[in-house]
Image: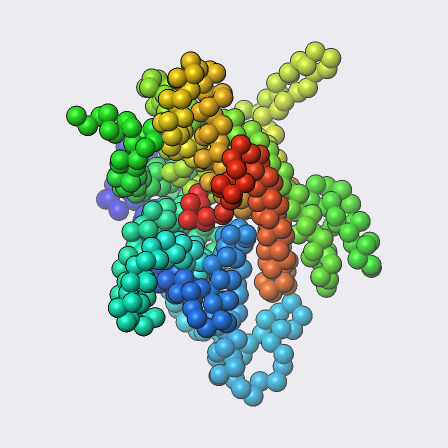
Length: 293
Length: 279
């Protein structure tokens, strides 16, 4: 990066660090923070969409759709999310390849599952074995995003379903009395009102989503945990920048990053809670009443 | 090999009894059920111990956080912020790195009749190191729940206690604490469920599974990797965890009933699982 970095072995401490922290691998490490933010930015709206779909399905008049919605929203209660992550990332990949296989190679005779192998024809491979490295990485990342969206969509569906039930019944009955049909009641009365009830649950979900992002590492994406382990590990003198086991410092850095990220969200949450407990006959409400002259 | 034989060989494999080598190929359904179930022992162990000790630290944290004195309040706030604000996954990694760097010494603890040697290298093993992280983590989450409940104690209850002349410890023990537990119980049930789920992270985050003694997810992942077929082991794991969750709900529901036993039958709050307040 800098001109004096050509021979790092005889640099003073400050210069050594300024060279060390700007190596190509470190720049990749800094970029992976962007990967995390990208994941958050893509996953949050997608999961909200999935959640809305799931909650609407759970309220549907059509029984099979309702069963699907209920199953989708309730399965996350009982099973660890990490199991879902590990499951979906393989299952989705195999499902996509299987579908492409059915479309692209209809005259393929051999079974797809041969013992412990999953064999599809060459054209159905995802991504194609001839594609460049970045396509492979993007595909892996997109699979991870889809997995996150499915799991957090189920959480969001739970929150939104609860919020829909929290909208006062008389509101809906009034809408019906005005002659609105089911669809109109849903879109014109229920949906605009439910967000107030969904807000606390959704902001909590946002915090959980932030804290789930390091799990990208388990899904095979080169994220910040990957780089922290990679860069922090012991480097012997055969490396350009030899150092002891510094993983502790790298993970401390990640800790600070996450604390900063959640602190901003928590400040907003606290403001919300204060507004909600205003005027309540509880200890905190009482303290607020006494504090205001 | 019959299924009963498999259960005898692998039923306690995760804690080191029975067959040494894991099955390598031609996995039967029975083997998958047995090994994943055997791994569940670890999840139950982590969850029960962390919750059991965490309850007391959580109560202390909640009290400290609601204290007037900043010397008590600030550390509690910092502790809760530190453990609730960062991912458990990162905490595991960080704790493991700290434990590895600790000097390897043994400390003799005299117990009167006998003497046991506590060694710091145990901290790098999952059975102790992961427990410490999970214990601190759940204490922080539960502490926040209890703190919230403490703030929601109806002021009428406290005033009534004052009117009866109850003060200090007696007022806390007989009025505030039971009410706090009652209010916090649904959220605490949630926390317990999600702590059990969080125990699956242990063997995927730094702490190595020594001699392939891992938890349920470790074995499920083993089978999925070996067979490249996630559609059998993960649903088995899911089944086990749903059973575990149901038992937690049953146990906490019974305690909830006991906490609310002074209320008339129809006014007792039902224990509903509300995933919107997950950790």
